[in-house]
Length: 442
Image (tube, rainbow, N blue to C red):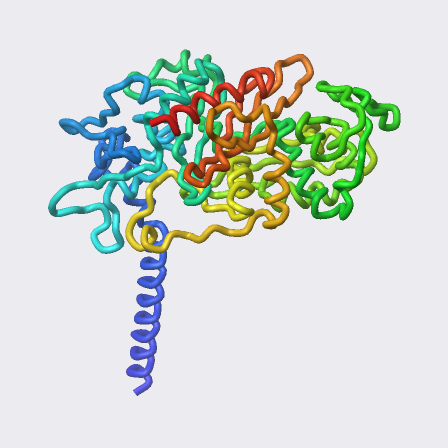
């Protein structure tokens, strides 16, 4: 009798272990199945480490990547291939934001029931929200300069244009020495890098001042071209401006106004708003975690805090998070989840809702502050935007231009950043103008 009980207990233990083991396996399969299916060791969908299944299309159905006679092919135009490299990918999977890597499981046709196996047609199409014509226009506008161009629909969160340069032709990958000389051509700088934002960060300082300083619109500031802070000097490169308030301060991009506002707000408030708008952190774009921004809390009352209020000191921002912020300002404070892969299945029927990023009244006031005559560069369209010129010792500044079209029929936000390109007004704004003209002129 004792033997029967012992054997029964052993069987029960084995059954429990088997159930637990099966549960563990099923859980792992659900969690990581798509990753296993899209791993290079899966010879069903990979050949010699190259994904040889699935088609990538742009928002208009233009084929950006296909498979012909068992070989991966790309768009017929070399310019299209270069301009879409960072959203399509390369043969070796080195471009982490490219569809051939980031959406490999979708291209493989993976599902929980059959994995990546298909009885009928292998793989499937992945449609991007990217407009390849717009990407090409942006690539041309950069004209070989290192930088980023982004355009999104701020109502839906669809990214229509995402260009990062340096780039190369994925159908004719350069040799290792050339890639090394290009410096980070595999990196999508729109998503995977952060840069000093310069005066575009004045939007954050203005938002904090609007909410934390009750009578900020009654404040006046005196710009003589510089401001002594202890033993240091804050320079206003556009000054002297004389007496001005926050509205004129934004219009002429006065460093003195926003440096003094940062000092009034204090380091804690400034850090809180940088984090609140995710500029010092990161966000997710189509499942890809962006590079983290940075905002160091400088000592209260210091020159470093004043510089941080104008987007200098150690402040860094990822371009796509800046795109999200200006899009939210345009959209009455609501930020639509940014994405560049079209939603499928139930997600296309019930897309994620826009979340509140900026207080509605604050967004309205920021919108008014951005009503700057110099921005009206496209006839018939109300452009609200901020230039930025992020200074560096011994190097040319980063040139920024970030904003949106306020016309309701054209709900587009944009960010242009040219690395060490010079002035935001003279370098980045003309790039944005050419891209927006290509967008609205079709």
